[in-house]
Image (cartoon, rainbow, N blue to C red; front, side):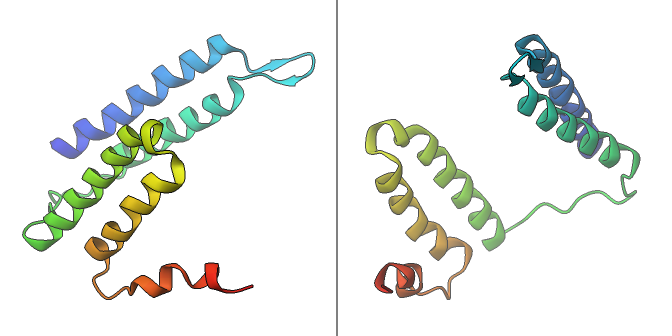
Length: 122
């Protein structure tokens, strides 16, 4: 039941976004207007929601537990921190402050030196 309601949410979110993008305008005399690309993205979200609603497996989804749940919550917390801190720290500092711990949470075997290998190459 949760999965079906989530799919309906994606359909409604896509429809609302497409409606708003339509009000921004899709095409004008000089080319695409500011609503064209949000309209395309909204159609993709809405279409994915329809496909997922029609192609729902009969099994209930398995939510992560234990260490997997900690990794998922760590990624969500990192994304929330990035969204909040970008205006205060700037893009480079806030992404560096999140990328290093996120790599440790998602993939424990990633070495820090691998992240900066491209920076060392001329």
